[in-house]
Length: 448
Image 1 (tube, rainbow, N blue to C red):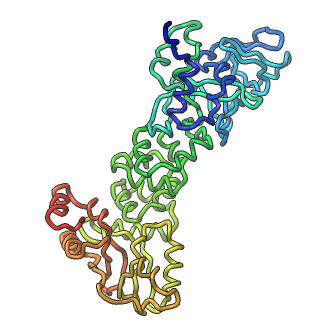
Image 2 (image 1 turned 90 degrees about the vertical axis):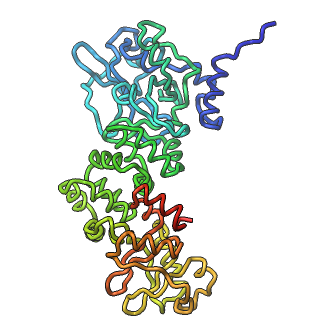
Image 3 (image 1 turned 60 degrees about the vertical axis):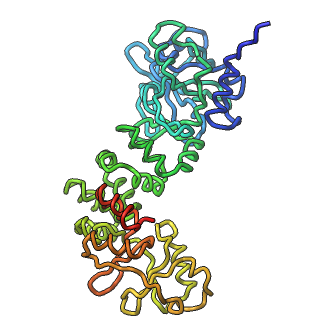
């Protein structure tokens, strides 16, 4: 007896499970798989009233942005004579592979006007780039699949295969036939639909928020134009800023040119100051000033000061993010200040200053945690004392201090001995030429 071949339905379930690693997806339901209708196949098909009389041909399907894992169809764009009219999605009574039937004989046809938050499945999503949030890749949408779900017609599946793109070239029924083995669950994708926003799903947004900043940076760099901007808009601002810090300089410059000044200002304000300053230096003067004007005045002035420094001196590569405490503050107060600034990269401790604001010491977090909260910080001051460099120290001197110190960071002070910033090891590496990096890592041991 011949071994039975695996059915397409079994294959699609396996494909979905492999893609997302769970079974709680609508494509795992047989009723949904059996009712899949290809969007590409529907375009141009007749739209009929309750009596079966054709009233027009389908031009596009409209969905509204929201947080549904499977966005419902909010309306149809139908060509009636020479007009493109809008029909409410609630009027859809039956959806098949080659036609749509409405629930009412009397239809109030109105000319279609795009509203904020709306996306056209054919015009904005089909054949455009989408993000596979589970596979960490950017793919092109070859087809979308609709099906009845929770008493509405919803987008439930997506096909990214080249085979499906090719089959759409052929006219007739073959171009409208669903191929289950290529259909993946829509909730695992993020469609970057148009410049006003994205087709958000709760599942895809949650998955994106769990990705590493470096992985998100790779996704952003793989996108282009409106899709790149839309993905940035989809992300939480803090996460977006972290991702931008991981991007290649040229890619980041191109992205900022495509963002509104207010959005660019928001993201750059959330980045590490040294990273923001480096980006702003490379922008043309007019664009840089437009972004700085859109920022909080205090942040903008801080960045202007950093931009003014040459990148070959300490001030040009330092970050101004640090926690400063006075020697008569208590350990508990210092720890509370660290908690307040937990979103910033200040994990290496607290800078201690005297009554005149001059640098005394740099206390590591582990020392603070081990001490009694009630004792003054002055009780913890002692050798080894922190390494520091003047704000105008040349890069060679900074390298020398890192070589001798071998710490995670060094403190930058002004001509009065007051701390104005700190330099991290990775900031130094970013500032070095490839041959200098090689020399530093092999010869001095500063990065060990």
